Length: 89
Image (tube, rainbow, N blue to C red; front, side, top):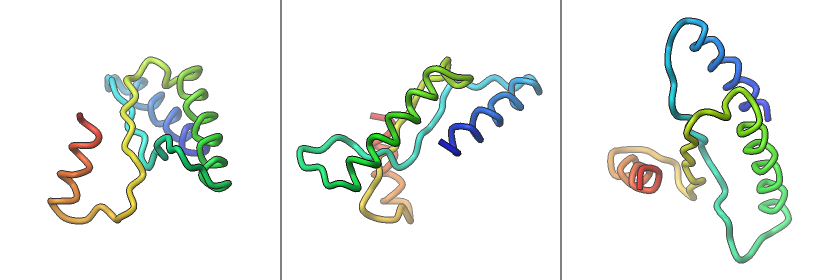
């Protein structure tokens, strides 16, 4: 939720300075899965609250882009291409 609050403040600041924004990228989104451990289930509930706050708040008018949580660190051109393909599909 802290990231939602910070993003809302930053968006308001950009708007005040006349900078138009159309998208919000949310990083490390835990995608739905058939198997769900306790930690994953808790993380999904936390994400659901954050997405609800985004939709209902200052950021609600922005197009939401979700970048999935990956099991590797995104380093180098091949990893960036992989992330790009998964985000901008």
